[in-house]
Amino acid sequence: MTDLAGETASACRVCGGEVAEFLDLGRQPLSDRFVEPGELADEFSYRLAVGQCASCTMVQLVEEVPRQLMFHEDYPYHSSGSSVMREHFTEIARDFLRTEAADPFIVEIGCNDGIMLKTVKDAGVRHLGFEPSAGVAEVARAEGVNVRTDFFEEATAAAVRAAEGPADVIYAANTLCHIPYLDSIFRGVDALLAPHGVFVFEDPYLGDVVTKTAFDQIYDEHFFLFSVGSVQAMALRFGFELVDVRRLPVHGGEVRYTLARAGAREPSAAVARLLADEREQRLTDRATLRAFASNVITIKDELVTLLSGLRAEGRRVVGYGATAKSATVTNFCGIGPALVPFMCDTTPAKQNRLTPGRHIPVRPPAAFADPYPDYALLFAWNHAEEIMAKEQAFRQAGGRWILYVPDVHVV
Ligand code: SAM
Ligand code: TMP
Ligand code: ZN
Image (cartoon, helix red, strand yellow):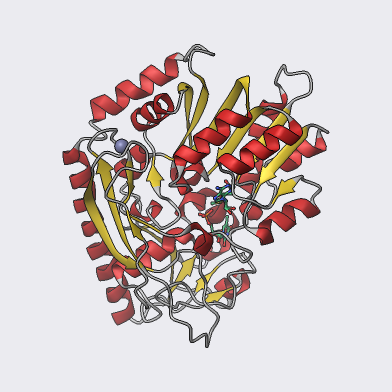
C-alpha cells in the first residue's frame, strides 16, 4: 500500500483542544474502496488512530482522510440494502411529516439513495437531499427525490436558503459523524434553519461502542464517536442547544440528537437522564477508554486464534457482509483469504471485487449456500436479526455464526 498520509489532526476539530490518542488500529485502506481483481493501482492508506479531546471530551480520529477520496461517483454503500433500515427511515420521515409548519421544508444531509426522503416526496412535501456521491444521488433522483449533488457546508446551505427559504427540519443519519469540518456544517445549519426549526442527527453512540467493544465502528468515514456530553458541548459552542436524545437499536446502537437554536425549545428530561448515565458509567474517562483499547486487543487475539484453529481443522469459514466495518477488522487483525476465502454481500457494486487492503473476494449472496460453509463470520453483526432470520437454512444445515461483538463467540 502506498503511504499517502492524510492531514494529521492534533487539535480537536470541534474546539481546538488537545487530542490525546488512546487506540492505534494501524495503517488502513479506504473502508469502502473495493478493488477490481487485477487492478494494479496502489491503495491509499492512512493511520487509523483514535483520540479524545482533553477539553470538550469529543472522541475523534487523529488523522483525516480527504473527503473526495471517500464520497464520490462510485461510493458503494446503498442505504436501502436493509429492510429494517427501510422501515426505520419511513418511521422518522412520518415523524417529520407530523410537523405543524404550514408548508414544511425538510432537508437531509447525506440522503444516499433516498431511503428517507422518498416517504417525504410521496407525501408531496417540499424537500431537498444533499448527496455528494453522484452514483447514489442518481438512484434517489430516479425515485423522484430532489437531490443536490453537493457536500452540505456553509456555502451550499446558504445558497439553498437564498433560493428556497428556511428549512423546518435538517436531518442527517450516519453522516454528521463522517464530517470533520463541523464548524462549516453548523454555520450552514444556522443559515438554513428556520427560527423554530430542528437539526436532528443520529450516529453510532460512544456508549454502545465502549460497552460492546465495537471497535469496527472506527474507520475512515466515522471521524467522530459522539456522546451526549460531547454533543451538548458542541451544540452550545455553535449557538445551538441539545433539546432531546433518544437511543436507537439500529447499526449496533445509536443516539438520535435533536438540536434547536439556543433558548428556542425546552430540553427534555431524556437529555439530563442520559447525561447522568454517562457520568455514572464514567464513559469519557481516560481509564474507560484505555480499558476499551485493551479489550480490542483481546478480541483481535481471540478471533485470530479461533480462525486459525478452524483452518487447521479444515473447516470452511465465509465472511457475511462486506461492511466498511469489516475493513477495520480484517486489516487490524490480519485476516485475509487464507482464513476467510470469500465474503458474500448483497451490494452489486461490491460483488466480484476484492475487499480493501486484505483483498478477500466478494461474491453475491447465492455463493453462500453453494455449498454452505461450516462457519459464517458475521461482519454485518448490526443486521444480525434480519440476516439470521433469512438464513435459517444455514443453521439447520449445521452451520454456525461467528461473532466478535461484544466478544468472540460462536452461536
Ligand atoms: N443517511 C444514509 C443512511 O443512514 O443510511 C446514508 C449514510 S452514508 C454512511 C453517509 C452519506 O453521507 C454518504 O452517502 C456520503 O456521500 C454522504 N456525505 C458525506 N459528507 C457529506 C456532506 N458534507 N454533505 C452531505 N452528504 C455527505
Ligand atoms: P452496514 O453495516 O454499513 O449497513 O453494511 C451492511 C453490509 O452488509 C452492506 O454491504 C450490505 C450487506 N448486507 C448483506 O449482504 N445482506 C443483508 O441481509 C444485509 C442486511 C446487509
Ligand atoms: Zn474539543
